[in-house]
Length: 233
Length: 390
Image: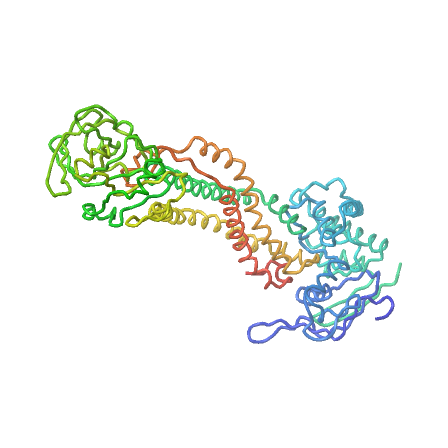
């Protein structure tokens, strides 16, 4: 792995059983991601964006090829090692937020830190810091049902960022949000990316998100169609 | 610790669903403990009353005596050996002679057992002192159940007919000196108690007895030829067996109750796993292994029983303590059923009973919580995140 290459994907295939045959979701992808990237994986529904993110996020395994995340080969990781990698180094942001409804905002953001076994005082400070990054310190006792969609997604970002992961994988993070909230969410993530050098990889087909990313990877029918780096403005 | 913490958060957050299960489970706790406590209390009282009224601390039976075979009564008596006479005079044993007889209350004919008892004895609770009268008629004691069935009351005179040891029939008037109340039907129904010496004279069996009752605290005398010693476990075996049968019957009741409570927990778990797929997927994405999520859901289900124990304690302890002090009365006489049923039963709730019940309910809840949770171990996290698991 090169110095700042944190994700290395070589000849990645992913097949799913379909009837008596199989459906190929990813078809020979070769990609590398560097630390601090702010990248969009772009393509229509069924192009393989979410599958790619799931494999990079160790939630799924390659059918063929090799995916190395932070020096660890995803296909060879055991369940516990994969869980440890997700717990300590990866953050996730989902389209429908996936907050724990019976928990408060504070408890939702605290959840990854509980899994890491961080002691109470430090945990509290880290949660409050994360909520400050997303501007939600006034809502710590609220439950997800009491928040707007934009606020929920900001809580999800705080939950993903609270442990300061190396990589955040965001699957259609703005799909359920209006334009204003979408811009706000992307700007929040961009500022976190700049402040902590966290690598952000988005699966999206939202033009608002696409307008912010600094690298655009286009997928079509599971194949890499285009990999475009945007020059810094 | 994390699992317990998260499970508690989830349970409290789930609100009504949790509390409905907890209420049903706590009800199961309280009813099981109450029912078992009632049976234990009844058992203890029935044993204590039977010891007090009938068996004493043990009995010596004439070797031919069989309480279930009245035809053996003619042969099942003998003169007391010297060693026994000494123990009788020391108050360690009290002799009883038993024979068959017939009484004719209000022109009806009732076959009965006539029991001779020493009026001075203090080993059993039969109020034999009331037999120590100067009346011409033979004084007799009967129990309240016998009084009801024969329609006899204190002061009534009735003809008693018996057959002496030579086979000759004889008859005399007996006067009811006292009607006693007892919870032990085996000293009541179909029996009259008269002074031992009078019965010996009537039967022409001087110095003889059918059985001897030992004082509760008295030491066990050495074996005596011609007499068989029956200890308490043997004398109370019928009662113990009956309580065991009642306990087994009662177990069906609380097994059904527990089954209903377990069904509620199982149903909640199945529903939870179906409804909370995204949460399961998210937990895995955030760094939990599938087995940790299985553990979390199992702990969550099992904690229903912990909360139920706490809730059950809140209303169960005062309720059960009140019953333990006040007792529970039954509208029927136990002797009507041929069982020892005191006027009031005082339930006994031992620590063992409570701990065993809590442990059984906890283990069962854990098992029914784990059972559906195993499905999580087979879930693909990506499907769970999309809520696609059927």
